[in-house]
Each structure stands twice: as C-alpha cells, then as structure tokens.
Image 1 (tube, one colour):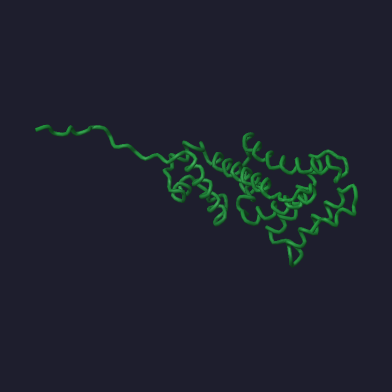
Image 2 (cartoon, one colour):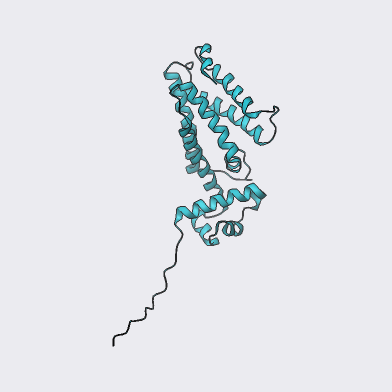
Length: 214
C-alpha cells in the first residue's frame, strides 16, 4: 500500500504586504503622537501598536526618521487629494474658497498629521526630497486654481504661485491659531470664512464680484 511522503519543507510564513505595513505603522505613529507626543514614538512601541515585528519597521523605514518621513508624505498625499476633491463650483473664485475651507477641515479632522506636516512637532526632523514632492503636489492644486482665476479675468494679473502662497499662509495662520486654542473669537468657522472673503475680495479685478462669496 502506497503511503504519502512526509514533506520536510518548512511551513510557509505569512508576510504582511509592504503597503499594509506602511499604513499600519503610519497610523500607529499618529496615535502615539496624539496621545503622548513624538518623543514617545519608538520602534518597540510602534511595533506593538501596529502589530508588526520590530524588524519590519527597520526593513520598511530604515530608522525613526524614515517613519516620520512616511507620516509626512502620507499626510500631504491625503491633503492633496482632499483639496482636489473639495472643488464643486465651476466659478474659479468659489472653487478657491471651497479649497481653503477644505484646508481647515483637513487640519481639524487630522490634527496630529497636520502637526507633523506644518508645525514641526518632531524635533530635528527634515523631510526627504521625495516627501517634499508630495507636499508640492498639494500646493500645486491651489496654485492651479489661482491660475484659472487669473486666466478667466476674475483675479488681478499676478504670479499665481505668489498669490497661492499668500492664500496658503493666511489659511495656515488661522488654522494654527485654532488648533492651539488661540482663536480670539467664539466661532472660529465664521472668523475663518470672513478672512477668506476679505482675502479673495482683495484679489478680484472687480470687487463687486465678491457678492458671490458666501
């Protein structure tokens, strides 16, 4: 009677896909930053929080700088997608207002991510060139919207990147104050929208067109 041969091959080990590891570790890092601050993000704690082996973190990120770089890039990738998806109006100026509102909502929904992206909460961290490219994509969304407003003769002629930087800086300043609990008014959303209307009105060729802003 024939008998089955016993295989001496070692059992196959399950490997967590690379993208899944990256996503799990990035989310774990953000949870730790939110609860205990960036100094508490260690390989050992990340591994426990993300449910991966410590060596997986070294293999995927190299070191802790690589982890924070992944958080930075992940944040700006999502941020660019948020800005891109926020514009529903065909009016170029209203589209910029929508984008600016989406900026604030992203920060309020993802305060820990925003802090790594913009507030330099990780001591000594400098983003890689690749991650800065992801950041540039989000700025390009706003710059392109400004270019449309100029091309369609809603905005005064100007360097679109410079105008986009002015809008970006205004949004960031207001959002940072709100996140830090330093907004001087009872309704931060109303204050933020008033800022946007004043800012956009000053960029219009015809100031009367500001009536379309809500």
